[in-house]
Amino acid sequence: MKIDVFGSYINVADKDIVDRDVVVLDIFRTTSVIVTALAHKARCVLPVESIDEAWDIFYKDESGATLLGGERQALPIKGFHLDNSPGAYSEEKVGGKRIVITTSNGSRAIKVCTAAKRVYIASFLNVSQIVRELKERAHDVAVVCSGTFGRFALEDGLCAGMIVSLLSKTGNILITDLGIAMKELFESPTDIRSMLKRGSVAYGYLERTGYEDDIDFCLQRDIYSVVPFYQEGSVTA
Image: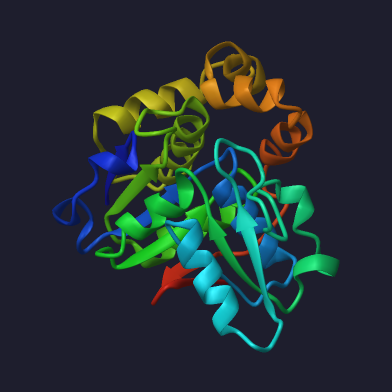
């Protein structure tokens, strides 16, 4: 198995992911939200790139079973039902609903990866279950960090490092440069939260804008067993 890690979705071309399984990460917070919504029995999640596209899907659904969620600059979108805080996606709110989500980075990253064999949505919240699935399928893997506005995000890299670390225990693994670096960083004795506090732009921004609870939520490990994947425009589990 070959494992590539991409520091941002803007670095990904179809040729890089064709015939591979892809894992998309946006720890703060889109993939954490999607995992949480599906764990809480949302019917599906539709990632879209623009606010206008989200409203268009909403207005075309006369059943009342569609909710809009997302953010711009980490803040709620005017008129949307939900923001980009995973704690808001409770079963009471999203159970049985179709969620249309548009975010600054994560929803775009998912859409970039459609040439892959399968596109998985992962976070610290379900990482071990995703790794089990990857091991069973035994395809080459590309881990795509969404990043922050085209730049590498440390929190995504650390989760990528955890994925590489867990996969590498199977043996016969070829890991490329960034994957090796992130694996070593994840396996270092330094506490992840203190590392992020020093070096993550998104961590600092969420802290300053009052979303400390989201940081705590998103850094929990393996609290859900869902394996979300993207197919034909929607994410299901």
